Length: 138
Image 1: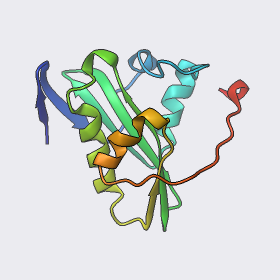
Image 2: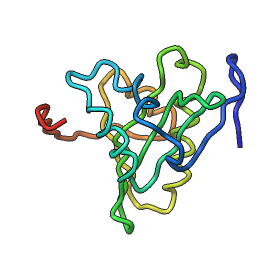
Image 3: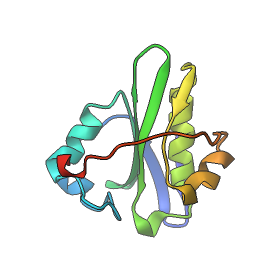
């Protein structure tokens, strides 16, 4: 299934076939330290679920999930290239991922406070959580 935005027809792919390190270059904007290009591909390769948004052959967004294959799933990343934001692509990626994960009892993600409203609109609830970041491990 595809969606339409003002920039053309957006397609969605559920695997990483054909992706290169160069495709991952525009992502991880604003991170204190970005993962190296090879690590970016490895993140998606080792995920249980991946959904990629494409404008033609250009990767413009993605989300991924990791699971215990039984009860719980975690969505660690949602990335959309800046010029494609505010067009529903991130929303579509999350909706598609939640559909993929619908049989899991719990689906968790962590986000910055300013993004809580975005995820709430998609049926998620705010909870208290704790995190630790090892920025030197990227």
